[in-house]
Amino acid sequence: MMINITGTEPIYEAQRFLRALHFEINRDIPMVSPDGVYGDRTVEAVKKFQQLYGLPITGEIDYDTWKMLYSVYLNSLVISDRPNPVYLFPESCSYVTHLGERSDIVALIQFMLKALACEHRELSGTSPTGVYDEQTIEDVSHFQKIYNISESGMVDRNTWNYLANAYSRELQFNE
Image (cartoon, rainbow, N blue to C red; front, top):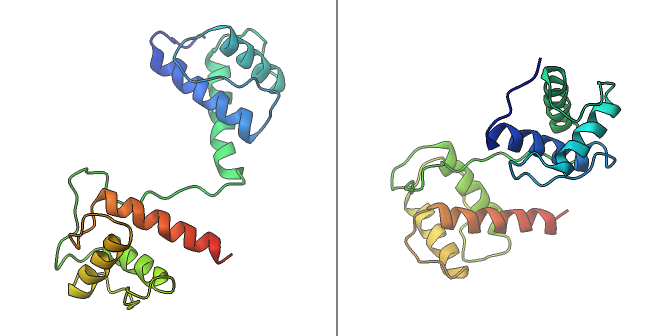
């Protein structure tokens, strides 16, 4: 049973899985660049994958190859040496914190600001409450000033990215 792989999206997904497996599981699988084109390099990678996993070596993605490819890819996500990221900031491009907001994202912002207070004396280092209060606005404004970001006291996607990067650097520095 062949999977209908017309169109670029299914081909792109298969290429993405094969590329990930090249890096995470077995460098013998040729590295492919996900481009949605089922070219010679993709055929070569599929053949090697089929060989490694005991499937008929056709270079084509049939039902059994797709099931195995997807299964091995999912397993690679679990056994990877790298931790999986957690995307915490809301996806909406228009999201901005606001005074009085009560949320987990506010608690995370406060937690990161507290951790950064050791490095930046301008930050208060108060304990997270999950409430976007005047102290949080003040700390965010100080953070924005330190990183030369427009000082609004509110956290939008840009400020979040600076805060997340600063926090990640702080973690690496303290290891």
